[in-house]
Amino acid sequence: FFRQFVSPITPFPSGIRIPRALRPAVPAPEVDDRAGLAHLRRGVERIAAGERMTQPSPLVERLTPEQWDVVQRKHLALHLSFVHPDG
Image (tube, rainbow, N blue to C red):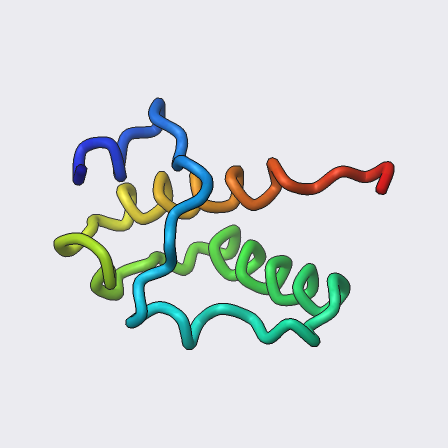
């Protein structure tokens, strides 16, 4: 599992049940798209400015900043795969 999790080649599968420990991080249904996008942009700006992700993973062993980068990119790609600009 760990190798697939941090592999830049293997995409995250959709339909994963969110572990109970992570559910508080899920945005409330009333959070609108603009607020979510603003939150995403702030995170991207922090990373672009050089902030490194060093916190322990709630799912797997400790990740290096490079592994965190791969995981976050795959996670974002999964979410963006559901966006359809035409409606």
